[in-house]
Image: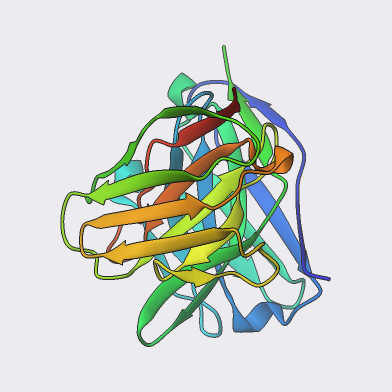
Length: 122
Length: 107
């Protein structure tokens, strides 16, 4: 069955970087887009960016002002999200999600990782 | 950015009730709208995509409708497992924004 398993919780100091991994299994990883979404405590879900299937192309939300980098390792079926310049407001649960898309656009995120809590505190 | 506004933000209902949640977009998003259910401490679960298409494995009591700027999610007969938070998401243009959520509670 399709599974996305994320790395464990992280505690970081302001200004540091964090890299969260998302290991996929149960489907052809190279055929699907991977998205990253975060949810701060009591807040709505916030889309951060995505990376394409095949030849990697990444697109990021401007709300993160060049602080986020999404990569993928096809041989290891793993996607990564790195967020730099951490602030206390970045404390949130970070999710990876499999995305379905074609030439007509993106349609939905059908499988999600279990989430990774990143806490930013001095 | 496209803003999505859900109403109501909180909804109290009983098992067996029919409930409808509305999601309004700040501009035309055609039918590029999805609905998710999220239970406490869990990841979101896809219910509906392209405004009205039911995701495989989702019970038929869930249905979606609308296009353009106004969308609905309807649960025809609430079951105990349906008490959760619900979010709409637009995938028409970057960034792919979500609504603020609707918390559905047992009356």
